[in-house]
Image (cartoon, rainbow, N blue to C red; front, side, top):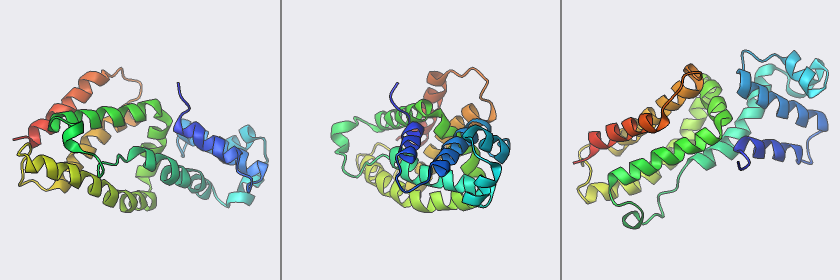
Length: 217
């Protein structure tokens, strides 16, 4: 399997010439443990042991465990995850790419789910930690939503002009519905009940049908 987005991030940390070797090792270890066990279940003593440094070194470099989390996750989210998750529809010739609204929703759901499935640690970090931290959540929303809406407005306005979807429903509501249903399944699978056996094909088809049936004419 190709190198995951988390592996790329850690590789870039290790190749960073401005960081000390100890800081690199602490960041690399902490993001692995935060992704695997969650913030609350990861201690600085465990990070220090695996990183091969004294626990005091962590506090010397980062001050607090919270600062360590933010130092490891914030650049990961904004420089690696979000650019990969946002699809640019603005320059897409919709008529050439999608035959109808269903084909667009199908492609969107499966592409984004496959990305998260191949990068399951990304899903864990993003949903298990970030969504519980208001400052990061607000920062992500403020950064991401204008770009998301710019992209979706282009393609949804096209489908409305072709009388494929309901014109009286605001684009923002359609986008929120799409994100809520996709995000809900990912959170359920990776965070709330990760040990359950899921039929992804069946679940994603339910989501696709729900969205298409809700907004199609």
